[in-house]
Length: 283
Image (cartoon, rainbow, N blue to C red; front, top):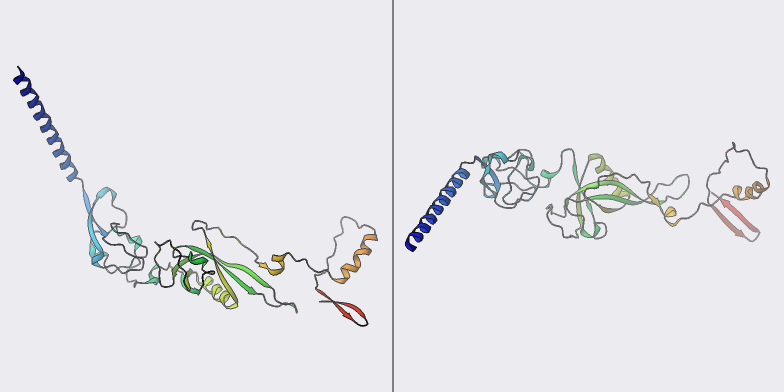
């Protein structure tokens, strides 16, 4: 009796194992029948601006339903193209990541259409302590002396002249994957032709500073700049005519609400002390 039960359990185990094997075989067969396409992928990390050769590429099976737009099927279609963004190992090579056909390698390949690259000298302070890295955005501020007007001495002013400027490279490096600060002597910026002219004039009339900004902050903020007098809160010196008229105005009859006060132009006065007396000269 015991032999019959043992034989029955053995037969049941064999049938269960056979069913599992048949099921697994069918699952593997179905997976192999899924349609796939060959897609060109990178076998090494490719830096932006690099010229792509055959040693950097390979092909991989990619499910037909999930092939990304712009993918390539043949290695020859990608060879000698230039990457305008960094491509990681195992990542599919897409048309949107490549510069136009015929583009030579180097920094010029990553400059956007209609833009220009311009380099400015920086130090550890101007370069935001080395945090102005490729791929970051900065504002450009200039500190300069204003032109003299009507005999007045030119005022020193600091003003933001360019906003949301892309840093293309620092020194001779254009890689955008590094986050460590790099203190360098030059920074290359991507500018429109008009902004290139502004930057060239700004660096010739004063000293430049780079102001690091949030990468997703694209808002433009118009400022009037700030002068030394405004910085320290100095008050304008009233001319003598207004000082002398103040007591008389206190005793005069009040004017109607419709009349508007006439303000004399602001002037600077210097008190000159001589042996014969004192004199107040205003300019």
